[in-house]
Each structure stands twice: as C-alpha cells, then as structure tokens.
Length: 580
Image (tube, rainbow, N blue to C red; front, top):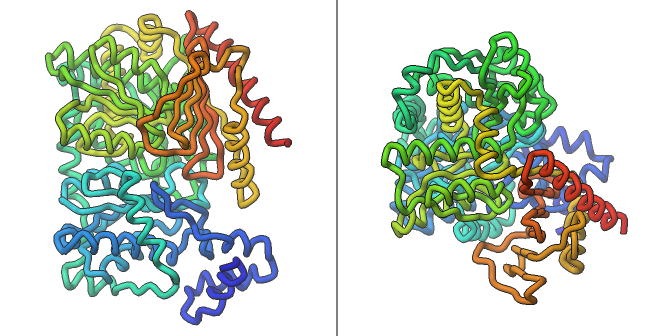
C-alpha cells in the first residue's frame, strides 16, 4: 500500500477520531508531511513502539496503540486461558496523551476478555516491572518515551518475569501485530463495563507499599545510614517526571532527611518546560539543581528522567564546583560499594555475576574480577540484562549482583527486571554517606577507584538523521563500515572487529574468526591494539546513529588525550562516508 492509499483510507474513515480528522484536514495540501505520517507503519520492534505523536500509521495515536495492543492480546490468547486470567498491568508517564493511550490499551485488552490492572495515576517504569511480578500478571505495558523530546511517546511491553520482552518473545508478538491489516477497525470495550465485570482493576497504593518494602532491603549498611543519613545533603529533581513521590519517600524511609527538591521541576509537565531535554545525560538538565545545590550546600545532586528508569548524578569536584558524573562513573561507584560491602558482610555470592552492555566501560569488569565475580556482556538495552537474570535464576549457575549500562541505567535489587532510578537514587545516597563518614566526597571516592583499577574514560557522540532520508543514510553508513572496515582508528591498529549483525568476531592479526554468542543486532565494535575501543550503533528508539568510545590510560590526562584522538578520527571517517 502506498502512503497515498494509507492516507485516503484514514481520511475516508467516517468514525475517525475528531482530533485526528482535523489534523488531516489541516495538512491535506502538504504532501511532504502526509508522506511522513503514512509512508510506513510505525515499527513494533523488540522494545515496542516509539515515535512522534500525531495522525497516521507512522505516528503514535490511538489507532497505532490499539494495533500494538491487539497483537499483544492475540499473543496472550494463544498462551491459553490462564494467561488471560493473569492479565496485563499497565502504567503510564507524564507525556502528552499517556493517560489516554493507557486507557485505549486497557479497552483493547478487555475486548479480548483479558484482565487488566491499570495504575490510578502516573508511575515510574520500574514500578510497572515490579507490578507485573507482584501481581503475577502475564504481561505489562508502559506508555512512555523515556527521555525523548515532548513530541514523542512510546509503548513498551513486558513479559511474565517483569522484564522487557526478549527478542524471541517479541518476535512472536510482532508476528501477531503484523497480521492486523486495518488498525482503524479494531474494536475496544467500554471502560465502565470492564470495571463492572471485574476485567479492569485500578491499582495504586498497595503496589507502592510492596515496592517500598523491597526498597528497604537494598540498604547495605543500615548502621552507617543511621549515623550519617541526616548529614548527607541532597538536591533532587524528577525533571517534571514520575519519580518525585517514590524517590522522596524512599530516601526518607532509609533515613536521609536533608533532601531538597527543585521546585520548578517537581510537578509533572508534559512539555518539560524548564529544560531543553528531560535527559539527565545532558548536563544542562542539572542547571537548576546546581543552583539549588549551591544554596543548600548539597553533597549530592540527583536527576531522574521522565519515566524514572535513568538517573544522573552530580557531585562536588576538586574546586567545590558541581561535576556531572558519566553513567560509567556512577556505575563504577555503585559496583565498588556493593561488592565491598557484601564481601565485608559475608554475603557476596561465590558465583556472583555482574551484567553490563557491550558499550559500557571495562572498569566494571576490573572491579568484579578483583572480588572474584564474573562479568557478562549483553547487547545494548536493559531487556538483555533482564533476560540474563531470568536465565541464571532458573539454572542457578550464577547469582545476580549488579546490572548496569553506560546510559545511566542501574539495577541493584532484582525484584525489578528493568533499570530502576528509584533504587539507584537510594544507593547513591548511601555511597555518599559512606564517603562522608570517611571525610571524603563522592568525587574523591571516584578518584580512589581510578587509582586502584586504572583511568578508564569513555565518551559518546550522536548523529541525528530524521525521516525517511535519514534512515536511509544511517543504513548506508553501517553498510559502508561493513564493506570496508577501518584498519586503524586514531593511529592505533584495529585488532578485533565485532559484527553483531553477522554474529562474527574477526581477529585481524591472527586471521581467524569466531561466533558471537549474542542475539543479532545492527552493531559494529572495533577493539584497538592498546585495548581502546569504539562502537557504532543505530538507536532503537530515536532517529540517531551513536558512536561510543572507551580508553584506559595511566593517568586521567593520558586517557583524555587518547579519547580525543580516537573520537576525532572516527568522526572524520563518518563525515567522509556520509559525503559519498
């Protein structure tokens, strides 16, 4: 079907939603806009849906939500009556139309006779993961676009273990979604009728309390927190998102009483009006937190993204100014504290495992090795870490200790099976208490870790290429790298080339190859003679291609120089390829 045929199908549909009908009429003379809206179906991938809100098959709207949910419903039906009775938990964040999309998903599932648990107001994504496990649901849905700009929304699906659907199960659901020919004709149930018959249950406080009970178990040194909790001064910003209530409650429950919240960013706001981007990875997101930190003399600044699965951390640097830590640095601090405290308490498992992604710093492997732990790499995306947790929980071969990724995602307690910023906020506060009890700042603690394990340094560059033309350029760029892999980057020879799409690792010096035992993914990674590395990966949720870099030097100055050389040369290669 051409985009014009798809557009005509929608424009001629008598019962079309009035708001969407109006938008189509407004744009009827703008063929470029209409083509963007209809040139494809918004792809239901392994992470669900994500896209700009608007009319058309390539946008987030009630019809694309119904289509995705109808496919999920058919998958659940195929699993049998027990799966339908266990049902689906649904949560949503602060974004435009999130509440409406959540209710459309509930009505679509209800039409299939599937039980639904719908949160009574917005909730963090990790609480949805917890709710699936706590309620014994068969699946979960969260309506969120994480830290994307305000014009985006998304739809993520979770499996019976509370983790995002791994590729095999996602492919099954995608198959059912693909069978639906006309999203406009999907029938939905009446919400009041679903409540009356018991198919729709509103959930809230009871799930929160159970989640808080689990959060309390994460404290590794309760005596330390009792002694230092009222001395650690914290500024917290939820960046207009979902974390406000639970982070503040969790910190208070553990004994951190000196917590100030950025007033302008405390309340939900779908426009994220005080920041250019509601992403704690962007240093600008901490501007107001730093202002308040100066006034409050805060030891620690915490900022969570809108759906509260990522957290950024800023601490006082050498000169007393606030420094935003990278995700890798926060991960190193958390991991070092977890394993050292567990070893001290005699609770570190002998078969303990740390899970990180292929683009996450190698310092985690060094820390884990010193404590006799195994480190396992996964593809980018926390769903792969959740999948490994379930696999080893079932086999007993390894015991989960910590999971993290460079993009500010951490998991400490596996009662959640996705990255959890609420958990991370509480443990970072405990880390701050630990170093303060030693007369140190967190920044000084980080330098101590570097001195012990090496000066690891990483960076990320992103190239945004929107629309159909942009997608073609990104595809062409990856193809060009595959056809002619670089022999050297930054003046250092490439000794290993990992192609995760082909599933092959090539050793240039030894002229041999081996299979990569990870799922297929459109990713390329180059490892250099000195151990430095870089990785090329198209984003699965945004119109971007990302370039990751990692080095290890004998000093921070050396690492910075190595990193600058690596990054500069790689981006020059990219620019040359895009101009061809």
